[in-house]
Image 1 (cartoon, rainbow, N blue to C red):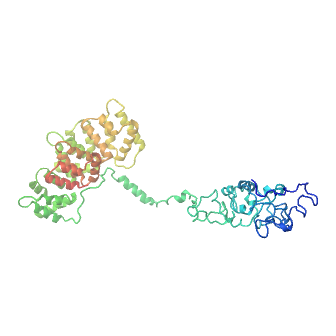
Image 2 (cartoon, rainbow, N blue to C red; image 1 turned 180 degrees about the horizontal axis):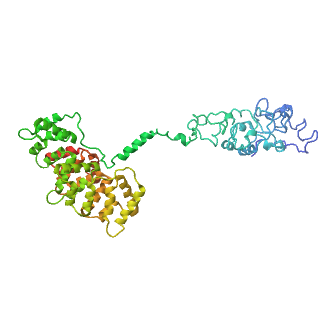
Image 3 (cartoon, one colour; image 1 turned 180 degrees about the vertical axis):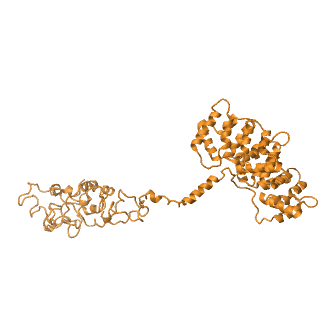
Length: 581
């Protein structure tokens, strides 16, 4: 690049004769005639401003304590060659930014005592001085460059107190302080949140003081991402143990559980005792409904369908006391058909009703084995004993003897076992015993030619329901087949239906009775005897669960199926006992 009027038209610089030059010659510094620095009369810049000559010659002023450094503010005083230099304002082009950055990255060593240049240079030193200045590449950049952080250093900027685990990247801690650098210096500039902590969430750079440093103190909880507290020990995270009951109370609870009948029905009934019950008022309502011509069936349904069995027995007793007549006989004389059957069924005591059903199943020609299975295989031990006593009191007959006379084979043995009402009722489950008996069932059925029905009878008729559930689970693991499937494969006839009923009741009584109700109404016609018996016997026990199982298996509500299969007052009474979902 060329500059106007440079070199001077007079022929350039005087020839050099070596350094240092002889006195009066054309060396450096020049003599008073026209050497460098120029005489006082032609200094740069001229008093009248630019363009003009160089400043007056006042000698080469070296800053104190600065060895072989370029002048701090413009050209030193002195003379210049005649005609001036012709250097444009601003001097020569400055070196590229990357050269200064490279020089910066090498460090400057020990900082000088001076606090920086007081004024930016307005020119550029002559070519000879620029080439001969030693260590010029180590000279810090001009004031403007010192105020701007280099591009490479900003990515690696260290804090004032520094990273204690990493050394300074480019030697900034050896940077000589210059004017203006402390205003934007890195001591006040917070670092980029360090490497050991999370950046702040929403407030940008946290306003932390430099003495704190990174890795020494935790930041304030409201700046940046809050650090998670250390995990508490497991003893502190665990819930405090519940208060243990005293040993005497624990023993009492255990004794009560052992005495508890685990085979008792538990569920939610649809018919519950009426509040503010008054037997006399209900007896008067029933008397009025049956008195005179015709019968008020709606009043009868409203009273009997909304009272529990115990309340109905109180009404029956009060009716006889008030009017001297038996309520059931009065109802039979006024009603007929299936409506009569269901009304009489709800008026009977529960145990007596089961006893009458058993007697009806074995009386006359033929036997209703399904009725025997439904009652004897689904009732609890206490209910079986009460049924036997009611059967004997009502008919002067022994239930077991009638069963033996009406059945035969292994089916007879099963019903006789059920008539004993002596099934185990303990709550404890013996897993080893369950595994052993499951293996015995497998050996007696699936693994042999033929079936040992006696082994099935021993286990299914004597073990408690919890123990049988464990045995069924072990059987499935051994034989890879469900026990219910094995019973259907290995048994036949009434014996298969009896064992199947036991298995179904062990798992879920509501599921068994939902199947019974569905079969009573499925297809052409209705088995009204089974339908009435199932509804009346379960409406005060677990009808809510039965309805849920019914809908789950057949995707239709029991209420809707009864409504479509029955009619008249008979349907109204059944729907009142079942209740809407």
